[in-house]
Length: 361
Image (cartoon, rainbow, N blue to C red; front, side):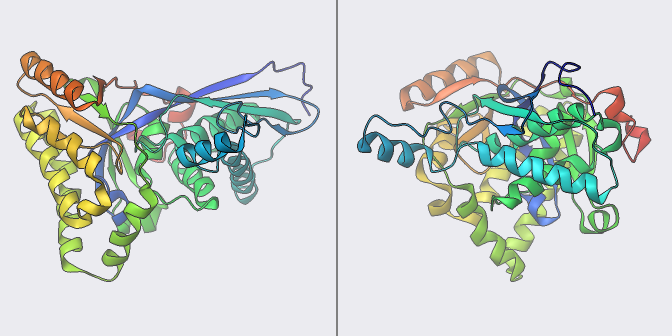
């Protein structure tokens, strides 16, 4: 058992994510191309303590209100849940993983807290970022980073969210674990054999400058996913064929980046959104989300959702003058626009040694 004096505190950061191509086919045994988005992040902080304590966030886990009206307004805008449940579920699933894999956890208790600046319900993977940062704290506190395979970590993160009824795929968690730019293959045969997808990091400098656009309106990704998921399971031809095409866009996009064929990349991004709209329908996507894409397209920029709605990623392949037109159009429409900052690759030497495919290390 380690004494509380041996470790002061551990702090880990996990970033938002932008799905560049192929989403949402990660939930449908497809392929995706995604990158870590350094514009926003979540932080988890762990310090040794006598008891195990999960600290509520002073804003996101608010329990004190100035009035009943304040409480109702808060719930309507932010929902009922903060991040404490995410930290708690992460601790539970981490413990179960270690138990199942016969990993001995030697350490005392701790106090765990979090913070985040990732906008809620923007399709930027704010919940999984909190879980990812928490998991990294636990790996380091117990000194077991070398025993938990990198490929298993996205599954572990997803299992914690699954405990809470959060509907999602692996794409976001892979991007947050690996950082940088990652191509992902979720083919059923490989998933059944390995228990995880095939994750191939690419050079982030291959990415041209992208821009993040978002509106401050909530979007329920669970509802957006559910109807199409059922239609896919029921074998509806439109959904099956469209999702297969969406998955193929990711591999084409990888080739386009390697060849620096940015006009092709732009066409693929637009096609990704068009197929999503065809499958999900305007009512599910939401008028504001669709309008953000249309505003970007009005100046000739390529544009698609970063995730399930609330934010979009735009590519001005014509250069700086097109960027200025896009900025003006977003300002006029009341949308926030900023350059998309790419997270560098995050895996350490210790992490790389846990990879099943050592050719990636």
